[in-house]
Image (tube, rainbow, N blue to C red; front, side, top):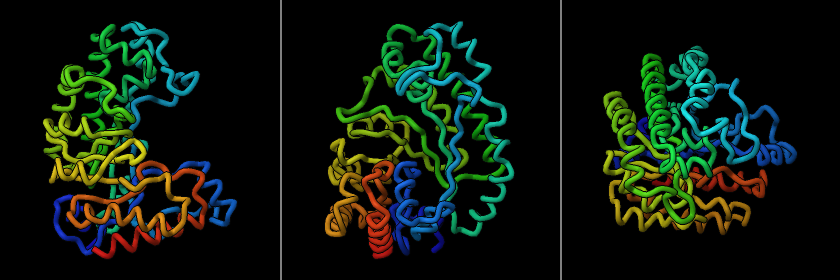
Length: 328
């Protein structure tokens, strides 16, 4: 089986030759700086260097490089929470060349995809993530109540941008899967209520999901924290795949699979134990093994690999990942 065939088999709960050995998240710069200091070549392709399966992600961001920058982490870029301020910002949003700037690279990678040995996936920002980035974390949560019209205005524009990006990309390449960047759950579950989700997000998801289904693209929700309560919300929309399934947020993979037998899952490997040696790493793979054997699950770090993980630590992790994925 090629990598693409194995990926599709896993996501369809079929028996692949092996589970793809991938890391869905890019590596922290602090982590890679450490690895370079410990001997990894500065120009190394990290996936190839560690013998992992190869994938190519394209993240289509709706905020252009000309936009003002947030003053600090979690702050927004709007001058005020008003339609006028949003209209003033719009020239810096929804870049017309979001896809075309990568056209030659996409065409080149599509040739590799067609051999079956490279996965291509795209990321678009979801209808919680996008307005939060403009408003900032604090103001965004109040805006559901204080500025509902502005929230809908933003998400209507985001939907239009997402539909355009999807059509332009699919003219060049049909991705193997896509993720919506959402991050709308943390350690205590969802950051908004189900009625707010239904009012402010469902109409826009319903539209874009229809288009994604027409293209035959697998949809994955990327939200940090504990996704347990969110899963049924997205299942109602027909989305049945999630990552990264953060262990330190209390995500119980076995419990989720028991409650949702056909849920597709990516991630789940506890990043907080990656520096504790081979025995700890192997024990974590053994914890995940029952779900791996059931299908519909690709093990991967449950977020970016932290800087506490040395080059030697990650070599052991990557070796075990390949071992467990290929023992299926």
